[in-house]
Image (cartoon, rainbow, N blue to C red; front, side):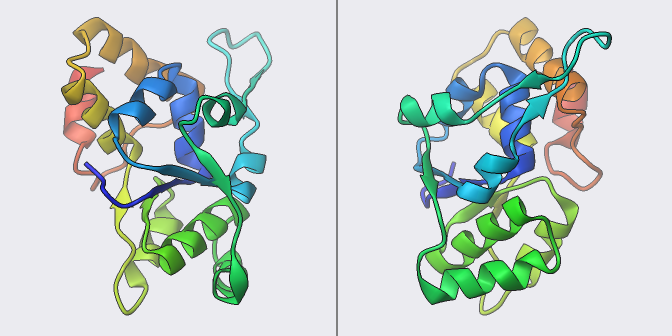
Length: 179
């Protein structure tokens, strides 16, 4: 999968936290994973399995403590200026994540439609992208996850994070078939 560092945006973080197997997914990527401070601060809640119950508070802190991610902030004027520029078009977590990716030549893990479009328009070269579905596919194929565990994981992401890969995601058909 990814050899360059991978920056996880807010939506991807929430999807992985909703899955309850985020640790395993991050481990299988075999690359350095970064989380922008703005994305870490935006990540607050995932829905409960019981609709009558309140949303569940979540955090990336256990991932940081386990050494699976590093939390980073913009460094220097280039990253700060890119962050301000991008924040006028997309949410802060995505904007800071994209600014770090653009400046450091990292890969951006995002499912946010606006962030993906903006990342693709950047010059001199677009920022490389990864989706939640691609990350889950990597985990499922690299670790030979049991079909039932995979199905429950996909359903948990759909239910708790309300995420289904959008049209155009290369792994959408795989996801829909496996859930």
